[in-house]
Image: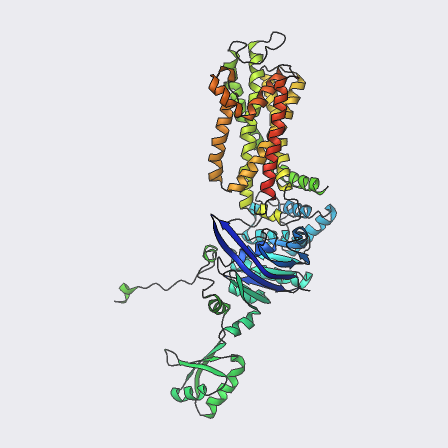
Amino acid sequence: MPIIEARGLARTFTSRKRTVHAVRGVDLTVEPGEIVGFLGPNGAGKTTTLRMLTTLLQPTAGTAIVAGADLRRDPLEVRRRIGYVPQAIGQTMGGTDPECLVSEELLDQAALYRIPKADAAARTELLIRQLDLGGLDKRLVKTLSGGQRRRLEIALGLVHEPPLVFLDEPTTGLDPQSRSNLWEHIRGLRADLGTTVFLTTHYLDEADALCDRVFIIDNGVTVASGTPDELKRQVSGDVVTLAVNGAADKARELLARQPIVGDVTVSDDGGLRLNVVNGAEALPSLLRVLDDAGITLHSINLSRPTLDDVFLTMTGRSLRDDSPSAAASGQPEPTAPQATPAGKE
Amino acid sequence: MTFIHDTLVVFRREMRLSLRNPAWVIIALVQPVLYLVLFGPLLANLTAGTLGGAPASGGATGAAAAYRFFVPGLLIQLGLFGSTFVGFAIISDWRGGVIERFRVTPVSRLAVMSGRVLRDTLVLVVQAVILVLVGIGFGLRAPVSAVLISLGFIVFVAVGLASVSYATALTVKSEDAFAPMLNSVIVPLVLLSGIMLPLTLAPGWLQGVARVSPFRYIIDAMREAFAGHYANTIMLEGVLVAVGLAAVCLWLGSRVFVRENA
C-alpha cells in the first residue's frame, strides 16, 4: 500500500474577492521506503502542496491518504505518523529556538508527541549520535553552525520514529560540504530505518543524486513523474557530438541513415551533433558505421540531458533562473565572463 | 487529560526560557517602581478624600491613603504594559518556524497558547507581589486579604491581556504593525482607567467615556478591597468585568490558534 496517495489535491485562496488556484490538482503516489523529490518553480504550488500533506493547510478539493490516515478526515492521526522539517530560509525558519539547548529542543519535541520521559532520553541520545550532534547537547541552538542547526531540525522531525518524513528544502543555505554530508544522513535514514522521505528542493543535482523518483509540479498540477533517468530520456534523449578527420559531409549522410539516430546537425566548429535515444548503447554501432566507411574519428563525446533540461521542457522555465532563494543561499551562480572591450582594443 | 499535559509541556518550555533571562522580569518592574517613587509622593500631598473611595478606617495618614489608591492602579498598569507585550515573542517564534513545528505535532493547538498564557500569568503575579512589597516599603498599609483579592484580579487581567496579545500578534505577524497597535490601545486604556489620578476629578463627559475601560472597574474594586470593603456593588462589578474580560479574550485567542492557518 502506498504511503502517500493523493488524488486531485487542490487548494484555492480567496482574497479581496479574487480567487487564486494555488494548487489545481496534484496526484502523488509514493511507496514506502522511497526517497521522493518534489520539484517546481517558485509559485508552482510546491509549498502549498507540502503544507496540505502535513496538515498545516486544509485542501479545498481532492483526497489523500498519508501514512495510512485520511488527511481530511483524521489530520490528527496524520500528525502522529509523520515528521516534518520546515524550510530553514524564507518567510519562516526551521523551527528551532535560538535560546534553547539542543537537548531541550529534542526532549520538548518528544514531549509534544507524548513520548514517556525515559524513552525520550534514549531517543534523544540516539539521534544526537546518528546526526553527528555529539558533544553539542548542552549548547544553545544559537551557537550552532548552519549545518549543525539543520541536522538538529532534522533530528526533531525524527524524534517519534515516523515512517514518513517531509523535508522542505533540506539543504538550502548550506555550504557544499554540509550539503553532501546531509545527503548521507538522508540516505542513512532510509537504509537504517526504512523511512520514506518526501523532500522539496531547488537543486536539481540534489534531486538527481538523492531521489529515487521525482515529481514535477507546475501551475498547480503535477506535470511529470518518474526516476530522474526516465524523465531525462522522455525529454530529448542523449546527444552525441563527434568530429571526424575530413569527409564530414559523408559521415553526416551515413549517420543520418541510421535508424537509431534522430536529428543530425553541424555544430559551429564543424563537428556533428546527433540526437539518439540511448547514447551509451548507440555509440558502438555508430563507431562501426564510420569505421566501415573508412572515416577516422578525431573526437567523440556523449552528453546526457540534465534534470534542468527536463525542467525546461516540462515547465518552459529553468528552475534555477527563477529561484531567488538559490541565489540568496550562497549557491554560486555561474557568473558571466566580464566583457572588457576597452582592454581588447 | 491531554490538553492539560500539552499545556504543561508548553508552559515548562516557556518558563525555562523566561528563567534563562530572569532580568526581564525585573526590568519590567522598573517602570512601575519609578512611578511609585517619583509620582507617589505627589499623591500623598493631596487632601484626603480627593482620592475617592471611602475614607480608610482608622484615620489613615495621607501617605497610606495615597498608596492604597496608587498601588492598585500600578498593578493594572504593570499588566497593561507587561502582558500585552508578550505578543512580540510569538511573532519571533512564528518567524523562527517554531509555531509551525508545533502545529505539525499532535500537540493541542490551543495548548500552544494556553501554556504561554499560564507562564505569563505566573510572571505577572510574581511581579505584582514584588510591586506590593515595594509599596509596603513606601508606606502602603493594606489587609492581607485585600492583597490576595488584588492578585486574583491580576490573574484574570493577565489571562485576558496575554491571550488577546498573542491572538493579535499571530494575526498581524509583524512587529512593525503590532507596536503601533499596542500603543494606540494601551495609552487610552491607561488614561481612562484612573491609574494616576481619580476619575472623580474628571469632568462629566470624561467620566462617561471612561466607562468603556474594563480596567477602570477592576481598579475601583481593588481600591475598595485595599480600603477594607469587600462586599459591595463596586466589588461585584469588578469581579464580573474581570471574569468577562478574561473569558472573551481567551475565546478570541483560541479562535486564532485553532484556526487552520495561524
